[in-house]
Length: 123
Image 1 (tube, rainbow, N blue to C red):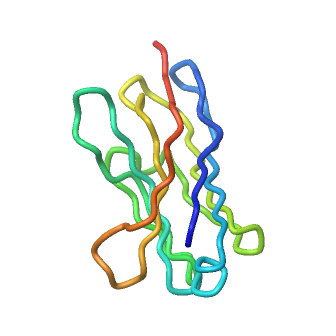
Image 2: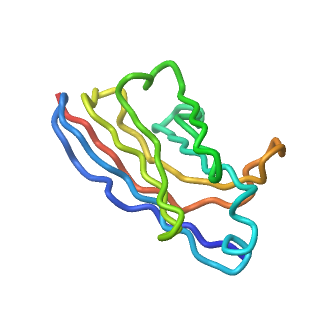
């Protein structure tokens, strides 16, 4: 069993920064974390959920959507079982509920999801 809890969302002006955290817990994550990928997704009202960024837990190989490349940085602290999404130069179009999720490396589907944290960027 794995539980994910996002935090760090809030209201920020355009050009500002936020750092989101994803705290993982559970014996399953602790035992098999080396094979996991942590992904970040976002969904704005009326829009499809979109991929934002991901990091392989062991090798720290990162992937970014073109829309956030150069502005967002994904990282993790394995000892604390916590992932981070550092967001800077935020834009109004970044406004969305942000989710973290886990999947086994090599699998297509993210099977563990947090409940999300709201990020609102004002102009």
